[in-house]
Structure formats: C-alpha cells, structure tokens
Length: 421
Image 1 (tube, rainbow, N blue to C red):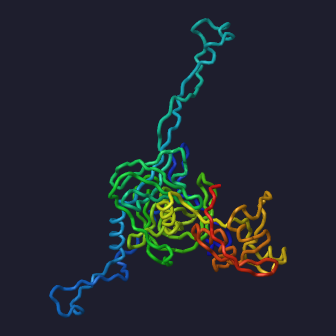
Image 2 (cartoon, rainbow, N blue to C red; image 1 turned 90 degrees about the vertical axis):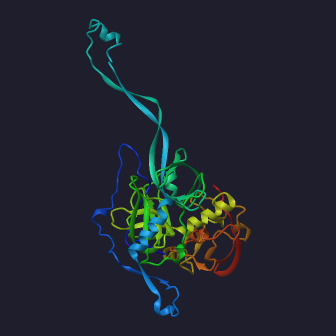
Image 3 (tube, one colour; image 1 turned 135 degrees about the vertical axis):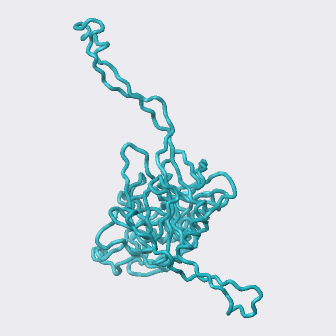
C-alpha cells in the first residue's frame, strides 16, 4: 500500500460540515485561480448511427464524437437531482442578557446614599431563556435508491442527539432518519420517506485507474449547494490519518486521491466517473496543500448497503486476536526467522491475546504465534491483518498460514461477527 509521502505524515482535515459557531475556521482551496479543463478534449467514446435504408452501413455510418466537456455536463445534469445537502439541527439554549445595579439592594451602601441617589452602575448578567432549534452543521450526501436511501460520511451525522434533514436539489427540505453508522469506516446510511427519487448508480472502485476523469459534487463550505469540480484520479490505495472531527483521529485505508477540488462541506458527496457512476465518497482534504483530496472507495459503501438491506445493520468479520506487525526491528529483538506477519500478543493492559469463544480460539491459535498470511495474502505494515479481515464477510472461511516455534502450519477459520464492544 502506498503512503502519501515517505518523509512525513500528512494530517488531513475531515470535511465535516461548516459548523455554525461563534468562531468558525474556514479552509479554502483557492478555486478562483484554477483554470478550467480545456474545452473540446475528446475521450474514446464513439457512437455509431446507421443511416436508415443504407445497404452499406459501414460506409455511411455517422460517427458522433462525445467530448470530455459534453460527457461531464450530461453526467452532472443526470445526477444532480440525487445529490443532497445534509443539515443537522439541535435545540440550543437561548441566552438572555440583562443588567443589575449591585448597590441597589445593598443595605451597607444605602446607609450612605439617600433613596434614589445610588450610583447608576450597571453590571451585565446572563441567563437561559428557553431553547431554540438551530442549524449546527451541514454536509453532503447522495441518493442510491428510488425509495430514499442516502449515503454520507459518518462524521457528517456524528451528533447522536441532533436532528437531521436533507435539502433536495429543487429546494425541498425532508426529514431524514439515521439508519446506520459504520463502526469502522467513515460511512453512514440515511433514509427519507417517499418514492420515485432520482438516484446515482454505483460503479466499481476496484476497477479504477490513475488518470481517470472524476467529478466531485457537494455542498461546498455548507453554502454553495451542488458545487461541481472536475479532475483526475491522482492515486489509489492511499493510507491517511484524518483529523478535525469529534470522532477523533482516524486512519483511512485504500482511499482514492484526486485533484478535483474538495472543500469543507463536501463531505459525503459523490465522486463520479465520467459516466455519472459513484465510484467514491468525498471525505477529506490535505491541509496546507493544493488539489489533494481524498474519497472513500464506493465498494466499501456498497458493502454497508448490502449488510443493512440483508441484516438490518452493518456487520464485520471477526477473528479474535490481538497482534503487532513484525518489523525488521522486532525480528532482530525477538530473533525471529521472518520480518513480516502478525505476532499474537497480550494487550497493553494485560488483556488476553486470544478472545474467548472467538474463531481464533476455536482453531487453536496461541499467544506467540505469527500469522504470516491471511487468505493467501502476506501480512506486513502495508497490508495489515485488520485490513484483510475488513474485506471478508461474516461466516466466510479463510485459510491462515501460521508460524509456531519455527514450524509453519495452515489453519482454516470461519469468521464470526464482530462484537459491538
């Protein structure tokens, strides 16, 4: 897996919504100075139109060249009705200011001043006067079904005590219900009541290539609904540390890097291919850098949708081990014969290395074992055991190559469902 840089960790600003607060920090992407893509760049898409009544179709076919600009415009027109703004509101205290004269009812001062002659000295005081529902944040999302299922980032709807609604492209405001928050990924599913909604088809993020044209759409800065930006896929399989949300630092793996402008408020909006299919979800931008944004691969969100539709919740596979990745340093310290793999160890507070009743316990894994491969894939710092488990499903049987006391063995585990705690 490829890191963003080799010399430093780039801290990212989670694109949560523009929060309505007394002091709001806004990060801009200097879009004004960027030049648009040249008009008329062609892509390799040729539509052949046969001339009616022609005997020699090959000699009389009409080739219609679709330009890059035309393809982008058509895709945007088609998907825009399915892109929504996600708004969070909450009952907040209404604070009232009033003034008092601290000398007015003080018997000590009244001894020295006749009635009505006390100094007119006013001190401000504050008190709560009820509550008022106010907007506290906004982000983006997009419809993925005609019956109102919406995908967005978890950090956009992270406040469990807030109420959520979506603003449609035509200005309608509809109450939204949070159906599920992904416990491991920055993903969430919302639902609005109704039928016949326009929705965005999902592409396949496993088939992406660097250099592909992409389109980012979202509620930029929480103010400019359905803002469009165009760029390319700059990189794939990035690992980043995202900061700036109440969720805290998050390590996001396998994310898509793009130079399409992504701004605060774009969180949860779709990253589209030129055919108008969602291939990612706008999630983060690099602070202090230009044209470096990141999106979660859509296949992660598609897995969450399937889980919710089939089981009513988002599920993850579970092996049940605590481990550290073996490095060259650990190899030398422990005098291991390998410099890769997952070494099964106790937790930092002395917790058991193997969870009781877990698949790992059932197949006989022990503290000190080294899992070299999981499902035929070598485990190392770039491809961790946790990452490989994420790609598997509950109930799936997976082979493990294990090193125990310098002896290799192959075991098979059936993944359980990850406990909620």
